[in-house]
Picture 1 (tube, rainbow over the protein chains, first blue to last red):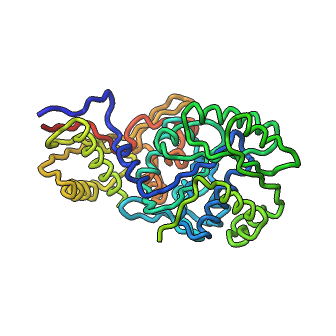
Picture 2 (cartoon, each protein chain N blue to C red):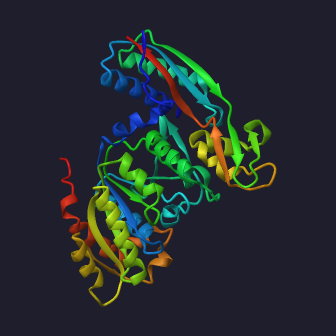
Picture 3 (cartoon, chains in turn orange, yellow):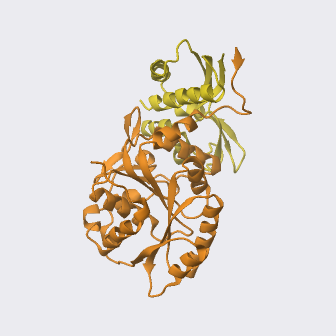
Length: 257
Length: 132
């Protein structure tokens, strides 16, 4: 008899499960940004809703552990956990949704590095997504633990970068793109949100060698649609997101049958 | 029932290690179960035996070691155990799924800070695997 463990520490069994959990998910798209407040949550939630409306099997995962808010866009009013041989995402408006909100509601959550990593591994290990055409992930802003862990744990992720044309956002986007390239991440391209009449983001994309996926003008009507996905899907904002799905051509999935 | 997912993780790990290390048969596995996750050992054990059978892994002796959950405050350095505090049922349920959610429901019993570390006893870990 020989001992097979050749590790300094104990083994975290959850890691062996991640590939299996991701196997039936055809595309994983993380919506990321350098700074907060550029519209990631609205873009990721609406993108998920639009793809589901087109008939795709879509999951939406809120990985913004410190400030989850996709549930607000979707109009969830209380936490719900559905257990099976793991935990099931909840069905909301034609998509499957998972967030820490489902477990802890709006409780504040002070978390540091290792706890963040553990939470992410646990979420990916126990969530039973089943078959998905797309898993859309709403990321927290910046280049912290969540983004680093996502690239480490789920190598097939594609990153959709969001920025506004503000210089404050653009400077941090450069840092983000640098990190993504350094980690050899798949960068889907950059989306310009709350656009002005200039081409500064387009030029930045060209300089950084990444695809410019289009612009979304500021739509002040969107705020009133939060919590009402049906109404949100009728806004100009949603129309621009539909255009965006057309520009993500290389990630489009041919529907089965 | 989410014990099944954790059992699945253990079995997947055993399969992976057998493949990586060219092992014919795993004989004994030692699993440490952290108190914080509060898993139902009977369900976990049943799920493990079913999943091992399903993977054609027979005669594997599974041993459990329970680990007490301990915490340390980053503000005042005070250390405490899970039994020192009280949680409501729905809080225990959330922590059962995601042990780190304890940060949403507990503070240091001495200074009241919610900035603390989970020192040990969070969830399920494999301590030792033996085979031939």
